[in-house]
Length: 440
Length: 153
Image (cartoon, rainbow over all chains, first blue to last red; front, side, top):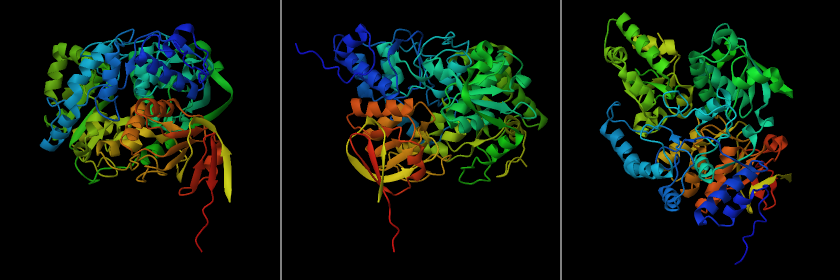
């Protein structure tokens, strides 16, 4: 039998990896490994390393451009490939029960979802954990896909990647959709970038010189825009958040990181006195020739002003308010429900004329709904709850035409939604009039 | 008059086309998503945060960029635009290719057989000098020739 030519391989491969490339474990796994090796070579890796924890993937939908083609999924399933550990994926896109849809909007969603059930059955064969595994915040305690410090992973979903790296101290590159799955099916990740000690050092010293704790989504947007793919060492957040990690701090960092990753390509940040590697290594994490940048109130104001309003009628009354991109934590869910109820009762108007939907992981929503007080609050303030991905929901061109407000900078960047700060959103709910310039 | 640059081959074949330049990171999902959703026959950049490219046609262009940024969905996005034949002809990176673009380009080549030419590490000077509409020729060894556009007299 002719020996497979591996002269194109520049990585230092282990025997089992070479065997796969030679086709000893089947044609499809060979193609998977070939993809992973070429990916590593393009990114400057020297070798592959074993993956040490469950995966999280961005590929929740059977829709071109967001997930793999069904032919590819069928090929992988047909070869009997499966990830070592059960994985989680991003949220689904459709929820007819909790979000109102016009007939035209509904028909687009039905077209998108026509392969979804079959796709999810195939994902289960590849290792999908269960029906509740659909969220972008898989690392929340209620969901439980929370890797340990130092674990080598091959994740996607930019907001989950930056959280896993920065807040949990795990190690994953920003893998693209499908490559994430292929790496985990091969059980190997190319060793480059954020998997290496050197790649995790900070090239930016970023000083937060604001007069108070900034909005995390606005701050994250400013950081991402500045550092792009760089690793910032952020100084000054502990003035407002205190040292170490608390639930509140994790929520702040979750939202800041999501915006950081969406507006740039940031996969890791260190926050002085807060995040695990900054606690361990302190400013030794900074490289020799780091750059310094200061973010102050003026910078954030300018950042905010630079965001265009993409509504067709810029003075329109908002039709929907969508909150939870990335998905809300349990604590954030309680906060929003309480604040919305207060805002509405202050206006003596129990039912607002905009649809307000809060988004969180299925496991988080289940826990929230089990608390009687919480469900009463949700009912009283007329807020709906959903576990889908707002960003995908808003990609429906007939939804995109609607005036939607959000507190998510990521959602703003990818859709026509208008970005407002939390308090501004509450002001709108309390009857404040929204003009092109702001709240009247 | 032409300027010659040499980069590293990620996926190369001989090709030529017109340059389209972005000086900021290319947000793949934000740029292509609207065209994918609308099943357009050519891709028009829908990234509102990129003044260099917003509303410009991307299909069959040679995109000159520092690197790509944004959502990790980008791997599937590159594959999808290649499959729908609305991809750029080539990507010329001034920096080292990022993981999202690298993954997408390899998927397009290996899993659907429609490669997108990519050369990286062309340097800052490349991105500083190249202009929209200039003719670019790419060789299989990663040589990039930028032809000067003479103003009409």
